[in-house]
Image 1 (cartoon, one colour):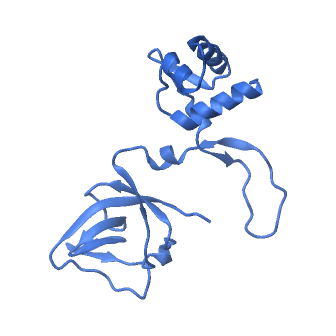
Image 2 (image 1 turned 120 degrees about the vertical axis):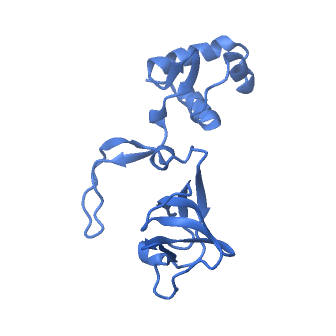
Image 3 (image 1 turned 45 degrees about the vertical axis):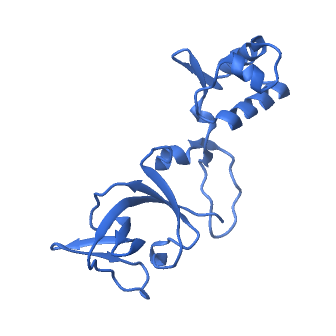
Length: 191
């Protein structure tokens, strides 16, 4: 179990470096105002004992189990209230779930209401995996003729179009150009 001081230092490390490799004891001592690197070494020994940090190739990083939101084992009813159960099943990282740390993954904020019937609303963020390959039925971010749009990609008998998920909008058929930027693999919404 950590002391209050150890816990505070661990949280500072976590905030400053996230899942990156931690710098040398000398650099950490200077950055966090310690007089000697030995102080950092003592903290790290305790952190290793508590499995808060892991050693890889003689370098340290914070254990990835300490990142992400907690996925609860109990379900939440959207109807009548029920007693909540505080059982944590595991931590869930949006970085891992949606591969956000990948250089081929992008987040875009949705503007407009052409995809509301699929539950994608203005202000939502969509997680886009960059690829030019897609299948009919994939939700894609595409460049069509003169601009980017978020729609469902359709291909039937060689005829290609982009389909909105709102009856107030027409299908988009490319006149000159259609390029797929990426496929949507998640939606993030602030409440």
